[in-house]
Length: 245
Image 1 (spheres, rainbow, N blue to C red):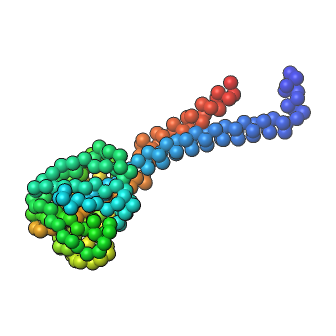
Image 2 (spheres, rainbow, N blue to C red):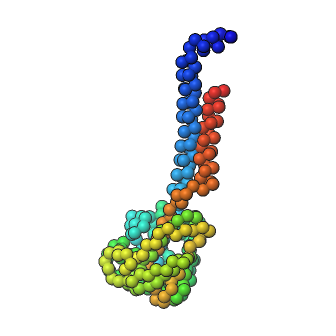
Image 3 (cartoon, helix red, strand yellow):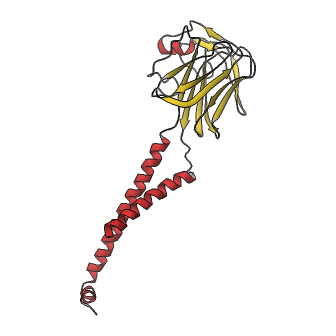
């Protein structure tokens, strides 16, 4: 028995304490590594794309201010001039930065201007709208995958719409505030799996004044998510090894 073994045999609590400290040291660094992974994950999830769009004809092109959230999220409103029956344009994110998402419309109608009820941002949102023919479409391309809330706004005309297999209607009316089913309709949890979402008008003379898309991160962990967490744990274990050496 050497001197170290003799010392340990006489002081076993010292060995237990050293082992305990090493385990706690390792746990602390692994935990920090996992936090790093979770932090990267949350940062990635917060980069979801949300957009505000207001239709106008370029002459009465007053859009709501960026502080106006309507029924979605506050941020920059994209003025979209559909012109003569069709148009294509790129969109800005809520913070005003340029995105890779584009909007295209083949609506078969023109922009309809009305003084409309209400004042301020509410009026700016609803005073311009685009009329449609049946089966006209508005398409968003370049979207990130995930779940979206889609909010449609109309001025004073009834209309029916379809997104994928979901059909719904807005009755229209001259309310001076936002009323669900009257001048707007919110549809939750639309899954975008590729990169596009298309909104169809299924009745003629549908007056669409604006659209909001609100992106929600998918709550179910995907392989990439698990990889990030694993990377965090790996960073922690490497720190432990280096500290030992």
